[in-house]
Image (tube, rainbow, N blue to C red; front, side, top):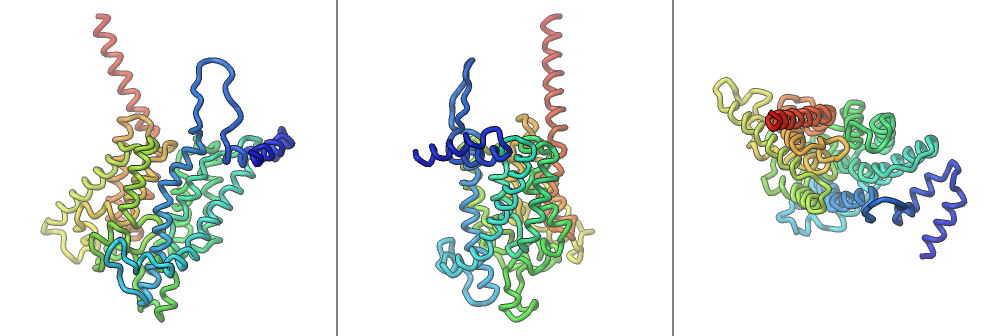
Length: 401
């Protein structure tokens, strides 16, 4: 109670001044806003935007913790210092050695993501004289989960500044952006520094030095191997549980799905988008499985491995599951109508697998597919609404006839 009163006193001193948005942000992050409605019917609740964002962060925390352990696990596994984990509860995975190494690499990414992103938000709030927007609370957690563990911190800082300024602030801030800010940051990193985002050995931290050279280990992702028609040593259980190289938070499908169920139960995530995107990915995978059975597709084709991959495997490798649960369901950039959500999600999944197979330079299509559908989401909703209007007009004419 004393902390709240002291914060309120500080806030009142800066009321109407340039730095007021900064103190208001700290106050409302810890406590419910003081402003309430004074007339008319209304509903009083504590689930403001910050609390909604915090709920999404809670769903992401298990992926972050697992990613920290996995970063250390992949490091020591590639260096030959530990054995492969045999189960989800294996001590070879959940060891303090793995956690310490992973935390040393992952937590700085989280600190830089939040520090730089929120600094930009505060600067814009002070300059423009509006309240600090809460949208970056989730973006700040998403960004370190979708980048390689060895991404240089200066590079991440540049990308975060670009994503917040160009991807959100130029459109008017939270609620006005047409592209998912986290994916905008990821896209900037990919196109500006492609060798750091999709190189063969960037997924295992410092393993090259420890193992004695670049030829001593293989730290590339499953998609990287498939894009080069090379075999990989991971079974379905490894892919589903997450004992594979990849971006920090994208490897464990089981934890991602549990986070998705939590978001659906809390009515924050759209189950329509999640389900339709999964169906779209499965449909495209089935089409490729059918095509690869034709005689004119040979095993020497550069697309053969990805086309012949079991259609349902596409859902548990790469960033498909993570994008489906946490990216495509962004309420600002996704479709708003129920029918539009089905169309939006299906096309996102369909195009994700298509890009994944036909783009050998970047064997992961989820980021580009979701960004593309972000652009078309308003158009989809427009035609859905217009279709409903036409149906109602027809019913009205029948009644009045």
